[in-house]
Image (cartoon, rainbow, N blue to C red):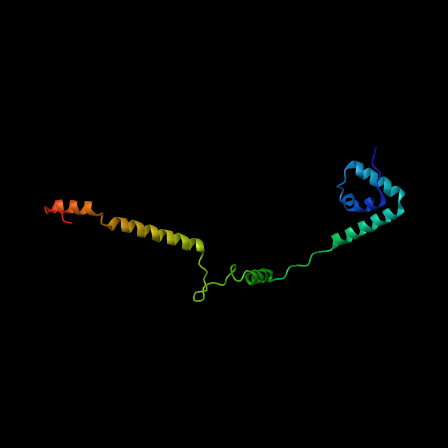
Length: 138
């Protein structure tokens, strides 16, 4: 048995009916209601005319400077964290990823440089003294 669609329910189903998104049982029930209800048929015709008119409308073209406007709004709302103009002197914004990589390389150079030239303590002094033939000092 197909459930009966009431008057208010029928009008709520118009959008899905026009878009052909109703399952067969509900569609059949709605079509049955439309056969017997002149006001719903008129409302459906008005709905179809409205949808058809809206589909014919074209969207306005975007403004030519839309990208600049969006970046300006983001810059204003984020207080300059994004789309920053750059450093005051150069006007160039240095990427943080490159800066972090350079800092890492600098730390590695300093670390290995210190390891190569660091005095190894008493063992090294004793060895150096023995090689020179002198007694190891304190």
